[in-house]
Length: 338
Ligand code: NAD
Image 1: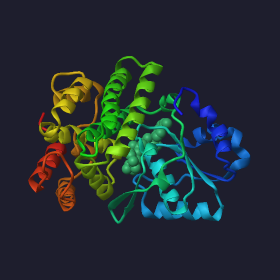
Image 2: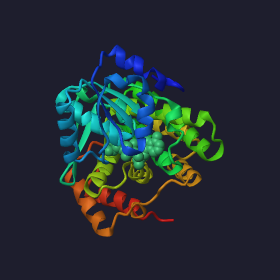
Image 3: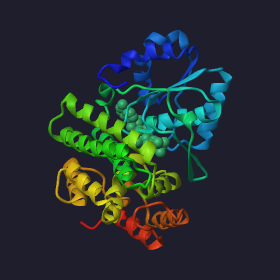
Image 4: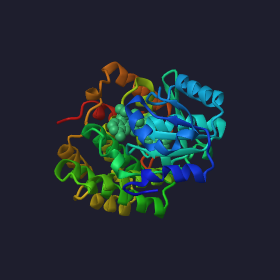
């Protein structure tokens, strides 16, 4: 579902799916929102789980799964960002429980069959149709309260899904169409966040998140996502900010190897004459994060991160990636030249 006010259809959707014992997965921060959303569902709420952590540590997964079993729940309602959706997915992976997802960031996880869990500092991901939500409710009013910095990085996380979807060998004409339109509306929404904050800005950003999740779900993840997952899993770096920092460097590396028509259309979706420069200009306009050092990564951690990514080689990418390329991309993202 996609509309301002779509959240009011949650009760009907839960009824349509025949769910009677819901587990609400959210965070303390989003608890008031979850309460308001479930106002008409009181008799169908079995339990809430709010001890969500970024990147779904295995201890959180165990706790959430046990709670779902103990309360004999028959459905999962996730209200929040990607960490919350990800926790619901990890419960669904082993239980087969259906998920109803109400996203409040632009992460896009709710549209993909990809799950992720972190064990001992390594983030493992996989694909399973079991984790794909049955219903997703996109309501642009739900993202209006996102702090500006969170919103900016989250929208650039969505932008990264779109741009990577363009260069994957699994891209299709449809994913390319969605990804390009995603880049266009995300760029527009990001600019509107700083210049013209009207409801249209949030509609553009949520639409961009939808198009990003939908194109990424099919085209899959490559070099850019592999780098970000290695950094997130090993050093608990903030997910969306890490994507935002790495994206211009991944694009700079890959632009020469992209299909010429995709590169041209990407440049125009970014609103300039040079894709990498247009993206960097956008970062300057919206005050996006630009360095891994700025996110708290130490020089020693950078060295380890480079090694972790090198261990993942070979990585599917339009331009061959070797150890030197990984080192160059991560070093540039660590402390970019002014
Ligand atoms: P997040 O869920 O941790 O949320 C980021 C921050 O936004 C948090 O501090 C949260 O409290 C806050 N927040 C969320 N909604 C809010 C609201 N409405 N108002 C105020 N604050 C709000 O981070 P994220 O970037 O949304 O998601 C990152 C996670 O999602 C990562 O673990 C990543 O791996 C996963 N992810 C998975 C996929 C997939 O396909 N499996 C895709 C994208 C992201």
